[in-house]
Image 1: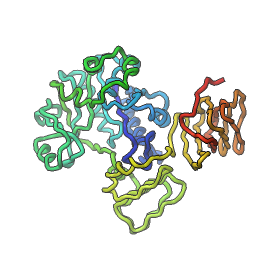
Image 2 (image 1 turned 120 degrees about the vertical axis):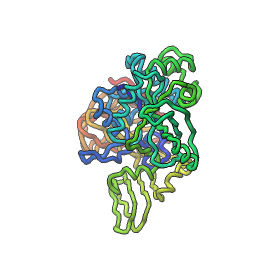
Image 3 (image 1 turned 135 degrees about the vertical axis):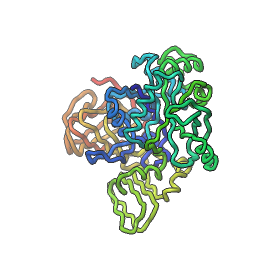
Length: 437
């Protein structure tokens, strides 16, 4: 199975655990059989491989999410990087060209496209496999998954099939309605449109060439920022006459808000939290190293991270975005391919950061022109390379890097470092990557 996972999101609706580089699919809140926590993207990736160990998974995403994907899934997963946001049609066209030109997928092979962040079980991925198989033999150019609605939702578009068979021709598509209109659609046998569909690769390659002038993957990548922003539905689906829909009646939840996300949590709290006996329907997700105490509250979500603290009625949490849009601050936590960092303190001419490097990983060899840096190792073993000179380091060691001096640090075991940046202009843009000596 060739599967493309669409990984978008701006990190607004699940603030403060999400930010511009850490969208909702990277938040670790789902408990595994090993009693650890995994994120949506880790859960979906694991579930795909449990159904098809040979599945070729490609994640279509922005450059800002690549480090988090490598951190959580490893280096082997395929990634189609969007140079900028251009909506779902350009993203899928680019992913199709990536599959064809980079991964060597043939035009007659089936490709399944779906969002990266649904909360589903194994039967959903078995249905995806069937969707891809149907795309290979069907006379239709697109085979959509239609999700059996559980209530008249105004959040989704609707697909009305011609009949009640498992696989049916599509009669008509409907935009997101009011709840009253949604009841009318459901009475006609309508299904939710969850943005899941399959096709033969050659079909989307042909449609992409008809709508965009490009010569292969690299050419499309290079001109990506000049493409028109348009959804796959508007560009392709609404103009296609040969469409089928396959029904799916299993569990499917969109984890788009704190309210829906907490419904999937197995316990009422993650992290340091105390809830007294008078709390009702309260969930706490705490990433800080201090306790959160809740007493006598009901229908509330509390989320705490280095980015901020949210205390909200669960229903009101759906309206968080315009308030978060007004918050302008330094990103306080991010996952990188080599580990993670958390900002501890910001002063006018300094910034203090806790850096965690995973075993066997290290930073790029780099320098800064406008700031000095000091590393203090607090835990673990590794080595530094400063101005070409190697040094073994461990707890208590202090390494100083004046502005302009090339440096890196490599972890042998899990390595914790306190990094202090000092300068009048501290910026993420003040970094020059260099070739390792």
